[in-house]
Image 1 (cartoon, rainbow, N blue to C red):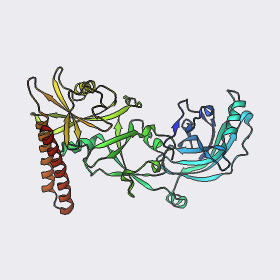
Image 2 (image 1 turned 135 degrees about the vertical axis):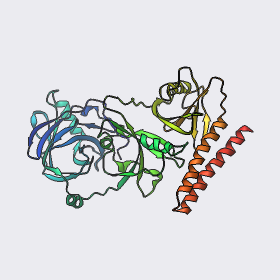
Image 3 (image 1 turned 180 degrees about the horizontal axis):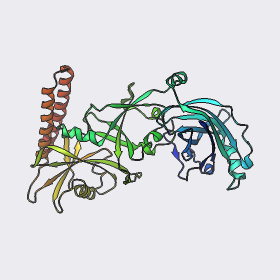
Image 4 (image 1 turned 30 degrees about the vertical axis):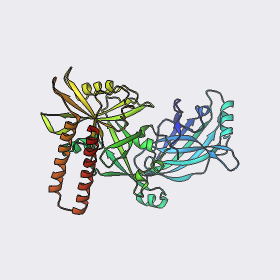
Amino acid sequence: MHRASTTSPDPDPLGTVTKTGLRRGTCEVSLKNLSHFSSQSAIISNTFGIGGYRWKLAISKAEQDGLGCEMNRVFLLSCNNKGICADISLTMKSEGGSDRWGPRTKWETKLIRPFGRIGMSYLPSHELLHSLEESHSNNLPSIVAHFKHVKSASDGEQQEFGCDSRTVDLKIIRSRDIMNHLNGGAAFGLFSHTIRNRQVNGCSCVNLWANHDLNYRYWLCSRCEDGNMDVKRCLNKACILECFDDIETENNSTDSVLTVFEEEKNDREEFQQIFEDTILVFVKVYEPPIYKEDLTYCGHRLVGKTTHCMTFLEEIARDMAELRPKQRSNAYLEEGHCIRDITLDGGTLEESNVRSGSIVIIRGRAPNERVRVKDVQQELRHIDEHKLQENESSRSEGPGLHWWNFLQNWGLRFLCRRNSQEEEV
């Protein structure tokens, strides 16, 4: 697995296309960042185009061989959303253009899966570093990749080469899915269980797949039975060599399903920056008495978990719920099918148990209005129960499964009521 690895923070080594021809080309990648290797890191070239497709080269620090020698490995990365078949050969050049690490390798026919990686040559680390030390700044060691007969892989070629990797189902949660969930009369949670899956190959690189469109960003999540999500990390920041096979699937089941939340922007916008303490929080607004039959999805916000809770609540009430200036509001944290009032929490978000994937509900109130949390919770449960009753009457197939889901939902509500009664006592 490559999840623990991180890419070098230094600028990408420059890959320069030196020759092109009919469905072929040659690219030379300078190893200028090799001296910055950490114990588990990879250096990645810029994206270059050959044969009408986009590629990268990567060098990763591999495990020690049988003699205890540390070895680097060269990977070819495909930045394409389709399988590619090509004949590939490598040359390792040192100062002066000599082939320090042996002659050019033989042509090998390779099938590269969509956003896939192909492991090529192994190189002894001590030889690479020694060559770098002897090189001048304008004449560094390099890897030369030769491509020939580059084309889209046919069905027959994909079957011939095969792949020992499984297919992974992705359940992609979009903002529209959350809106549809609330449009259906739900008060709690973010999504229903009817979202279609998209399939990816397990040997596809997570980072390449996530970054194929710069207007989207993807967050790995784990789904909860109550329709909520725990947001774990941003897949756009994954190690360049991490594959979907490397990601632990939900419930460790044989059915490989991963849930991701899709973040979208337009061409003129920039995504919010991600830091070590960043969490992602979803925001809804509840607007009784004008709109007391459902809730509205306001979007999500990235925030540091050490941010003062009241500061964050003021920001989302103003910027996301768009409350009138000086209008007071209450904020509630969803906890399953219950809510907890965090309006006056004086600590940080972390201290208020606001985690990545939490849902905060904003409810505006009149100047002299007194709002009790148990009344709001009862109203939200009424919305959810009304939806449940509509679903019960509209679905005539699968009565056994239907009644099982019905009992599960009512069981959750019973536990919430009992907990709230115990708190009042």
